[in-house]
Image 1 (cartoon, rainbow, N blue to C red):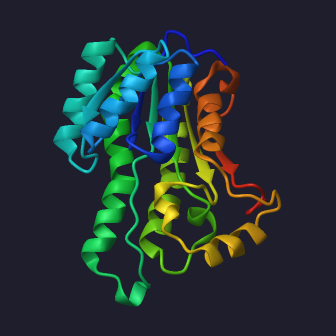
Image 2: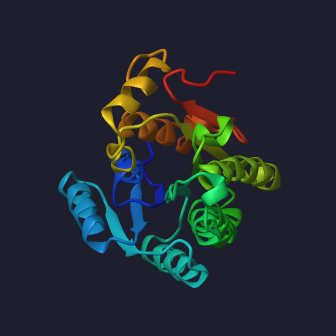
Length: 247
């Protein structure tokens, strides 16, 4: 699955799944533009990629800010010449029961998790259409497929990403641009690190493979969908959940 000559933009790349995607895509030969709010962590990631012989650049970005998104995409294209692969990974949680959920917490999660994917996709679309090739990969969640108590905002945003994925796939398929989603299950990240041991043990019991997933499990799926090996796959949701949800 060589990505030599390709250029990828990964949002939410400072940690967790986004960071792993940046490393995996670079290892496959892609030049990688990594974007997030934490410039220091991005610089560390770029240093790791370049030390391994890859090519990368860091872009400080709040994905909820439309003007920042446009400027970042424009700068990345100017620096790398193009963007072939977009990984919409940026995401946050603000969990509470819906009856107690503040409107600000609903809006923040939808803005970061869903609206940002629309903004980033729209910003890179003309470039992909001109070159008649592209890979758009949205990181959704098993909870966007099955719901989760206390995460109405998060589940809604991730379910919305699945609908967005399918709509875009239909719009741009004729130009050899694919749009797919990856739906991780219970993955060991900074976002899940704060969960108690009892909760983790209960979660593992629901996973047929009997283990929590790793960020590399997700990044490998992303790298596949970004490659020519996945050229005839579009509008698809690839589950990376150890069997937690089937069908």
